[in-house]
Structures are given as structure tokens and as C-alpha cells.
Image (tube, rainbow, N blue to C red; front, side, top):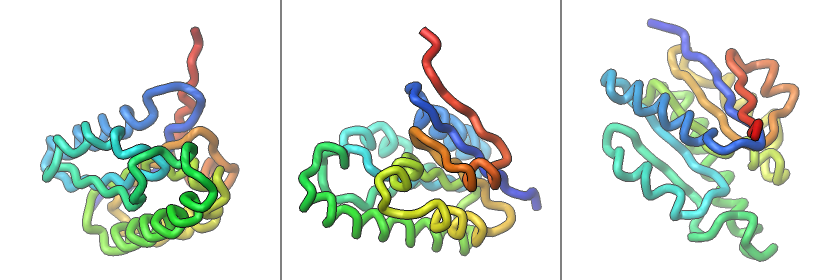
Length: 159
């Protein structure tokens, strides 16, 4: 049994989610189970993922069709509860080893928003089954996430 890795795609450039999806597609084509949990994104950004089911399972716990940044403060408070449910589901998936790769799409943004802490993310990852790989995406990386990651890619525009 091969030990899973922790990868992080972060930065101001486009393509972080696409890079994570590429890894998910590659593993799914090899017969491995992949799960993606999206955070903070609009419902429209999940449509292309849904076409890949059942090989790649997609979960989005937020109920609003709009992206998190466009919500009112009241709506954000409601969505925070849904986001925490998403993180709890991620912990379950990681702990049971029910997939070979778990993508936590825009989870670093959840830390940026102050909804969860770096420690919450680290705790979830540390509780994973030994052979489960994890990919985290988002705009910014924290020192603690950087430290536990096996691979960190800063995706930024050059031109």
C-alpha cells in the first residue's frame, strides 16, 4: 500500500482547480476512487465536475447558487454552517479511507475567510488513512499547511 501525499495548489493565477481536477481524472482513469469537495464557489463552477460522476464524486455543501463573496452577511452566516458540515464530511472521508484522492477545492479560502483555522485543516489531514492523498487549493497558503505538504505549487500569472 502506497503512502498518500499532500499537495497544495495556491496563488493568484487561474488553473488551481483545473490542476486538481486533472489529478482526479488521472487517478479515476486508473480505477482509483476520487472525491472532490468544493468550498466558496458558485454552483455554476461545479457543472463540469458533475459530468465526471460516478468516477469522480463531487460534493458542495453550500446551498447558495452564488459564490461566497457575493452573499450578504446574513447569508454568509448561514453558509458558514454548511461549510463546517463540508469540513466534517471531509474528516469522515479521510478517516475511513473511502477514496484514494480527496480534493478540497478552495479550502484555503475558507481559512482566509476565518471560517476554519489552519489547525482545523491540519487536524483533518492528519486523521487521514495512510494511503489517501489530499489536494488543497486556494489563493493563500498558511505556514502550517506549507509545512505538512509534500508538494506546494504557487500558480501565478507571469504576463
